[in-house]
Length: 141
Length: 141
DNA sequence: ACATCATGTTTCGACATTCGAATCTTTCTG
DNA sequence: CAGAAAGATTCGAATGTCGAAACATGATGT
Image (tube, rainbow over all chains, first blue to last red; front, side):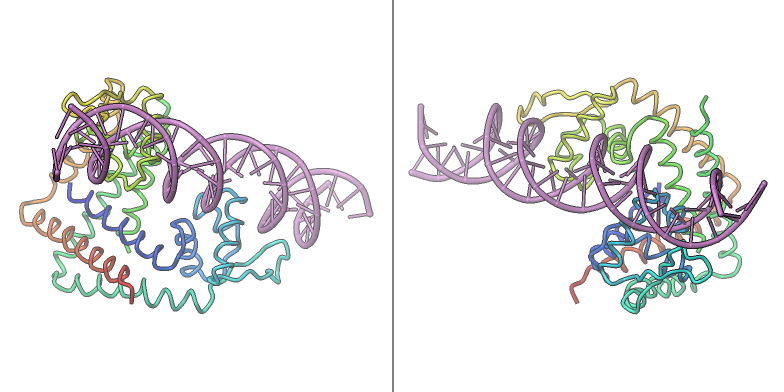
């Protein structure tokens, strides 16, 4: 299946990006969340990454040591720790991730509206199949 | 992007499949290779999974202990160890993985030839973009 | 033949990542 | 205002991975 190869190429990109930044894959996913959602509480990262609170703490530790995020107390709730991206993280984003979106958008220009509709429908259909099969497999039959 | 969600759904399926079989994700990928390629030498698994030889040995150990594969000496080259799937593995395949392919094929029936062409072209284009960006990121600039 | 080198896998010790349970602080509730 | 709940961290244990060394087998040159 061609989808398989696409998956592998995503994997290869993530791998390359992580290596470039000197991070592991988990840290990279965490950074992605922080960049996408602005300052987020640690617990939010925990659920987004499906990691235990303990593991999340150490992920944030590593990113902080790498200079990619900073912790700050939430003024409205001092139990919370807010994690925010640093300038270094934003510049990494600009250098590594933004061009991917641009290249992707560029590549899509060759398709007409009808074709884009088909593509979008396909993506949703494929996702539907995967989710359906995942729940089937999860069932304790 | 919708591709992101598709990726996540693949991830969720793999997660569910691994949990169902009581394996970790690496072991599952290994089993996938063995099922797909018939009896394979351990070194082949090592490169397919991008794991060190040492790690590969322990992956095979775990799968063997789980009753999913068996080791046998390659008659033509006794340094080699051939890893083959067991009946238990084939039945797991039939129960978990085969239906995914069937459901996928079924879902594709709603598209006409032209639409399938567009979809295939898109998948290849997307992969091209990802690979291109991966090599860009890998460059030591 | 045979010493030497190359190939393929395994063993061993070390390191990194994750988890569960316990702890600590802050906030909510009766 | 005492006790429970929420949010994050610390600690020790378990798991997965690696590099280097070891081991067995096969290939090569003289």
